[in-house]
Length: 231
Length: 388
Image 1 (cartoon, helix red, strand yellow):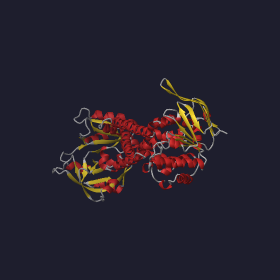
Image 2 (image 1 turned 90 degrees about the vertical axis):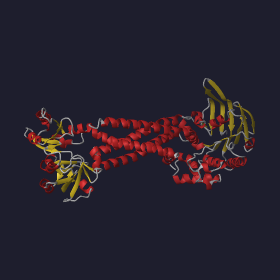
Image 3 (image 1 turned 90 degrees about the horizontal axis):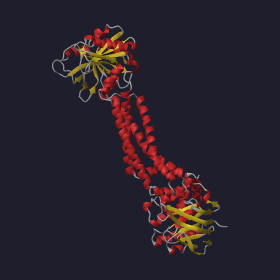
């Protein structure tokens, strides 16, 4: 059964009087435990597709279904609640809050749960341990390297134990070695913890870590490797 | 970490900016409590109140600094409806240094405490005051402040009246003290007879009269009669109820209420802009962060509420400090005779009501400056926020 299913999805943006067609009649099916790399030139619609799957944007037409939930039928508040439980986000520039320590940054998504303070702290430290940064728990983002910050961001993404990780160019701001560490970590999360990962990347070497690679061009899926795709 | 902790940390993320904004607001609310309370005093009859309802005050028609003949006391005492007349003079006194100014009146001890029953004095001290030629009584607060003892000879300097030998320093014997009913009454009372005989300007003059009447309803009629009696004399007078006279005295400062209101409006308009600018900057700086928080799953209303809470904290916290310090200043002014001489001390009820309105104003200010960032936060789409 499809875990993530996009059916005849169209996404247009209005720029003044001009309509920009970002995604055109796109169909995509992914299964639980997949690790998908989305590639393509700038402006091809990769991030838009990621946003639709992550429930932070709505399609102009078509359906987006994730883990049995039809995102098009949800209100803003319902989507927010759904995201907090289902999706972990990893961004290119980490997007950690600079005034909070690593531990506090990781704890943030747990403020949306009913966990007690001590339990939230324990879960945050467990997540940091998973990304091998427990010893940096009390450091603020400015005191960490880029790779370390991205690992904190991954810890934040997994702390609420979501089924899906959505990663928007997670290695785009890192050197090769740090990038390899992050990709290895994502592979571990996919292999050992069964997380479904959708990763946007420009880097073919990064894409090699994925089980499936899709290419987007001008809003259309143009080729695929190993994935069950129809465009 | 809790939601409150998160808002708190956000508030202090730019410490210098937050401190400067806090400081501006602290000063504004300190001014509001201090000036606001004093403005209330200038706009209401808090000086004489109920006790002054049956008292008239007669002074020189053209200026309160002119004296009037002492014989007016006896003449006015003969009028129907007049129960008792006493008199006071402005001595311009100080203790030791001119900076230690005292509200000092030469009075007739026999009549003064009957016209002003709100000044409570023991029979023993009153008798001593009446019988002692150089007698002086002071409010208990002043006696304690300067650590005087009954029986002390106290040198009182005058900035107006020299003695006949040209010496401006007078010596009076402290024969007792009194307890005023209302806080802030700090008048030191001197034996008039001695003052009258010894001052270099000659005898027979007093500053103004306080007239106790039998029925407050008769006040306007008696006042008119007194003024008519002396209208063609060399020393015409103006008579009014005590509350009206006090108002006229305060009016010498100008329209204090209007001036203070003007200052406060200007201050708060500026503060509103400062606060709004701070919150707008804070909002602009964290648009992307708000996008991230929304992405993680924080809903629009929670984030909007956080933003609003931050604005309210930004204005209410310094207001609390400003109100506390402002109240402290007013209490300090009230206990300082010199300061109280120039500024009427507001009663604590007025100070408390001004303090409460200050805090309400601070809350309203917070809502006002936080409303737009909070609304924008709730309406902002994640995609737009992440691209900001």
